[in-house]
Image (cartoon, rainbow, N blue to C red; front, side):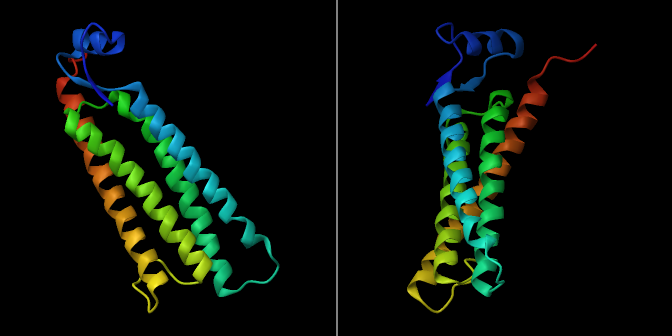
Length: 167
């Protein structure tokens, strides 16, 4: 999943020549973010179907939240797949970035869909096992989002520090 920049990877070799020795996220990791981001986006679009009814009930509000949040998470994963090429991260941190994005996407997908089905907020523990599972899944999504953001900041900061000075 993660490649060290060398001559067998033309983009990694070019990056090493321009910036110095760095680790480059492999194309398969970027494609993994594109695939799973599109899946999360599709689930978000499908969660919008229950919101088209004329009646506005509490359950429709949970589906509306799932619709908007999952679309945002899907777009974030798609955007992150483009951004990772510019980041400078160690292999473990780069893998952590990809996996944290996947944990965010599927954690929120699980929590928000269960919340919509059961009709509870996935951001509070609730009184039923299903509500608690939705809460745990959403907590995983939150942790993945925070970890992904921190790793993106770290990679962007390292890329700025290692970039050649502008003249």
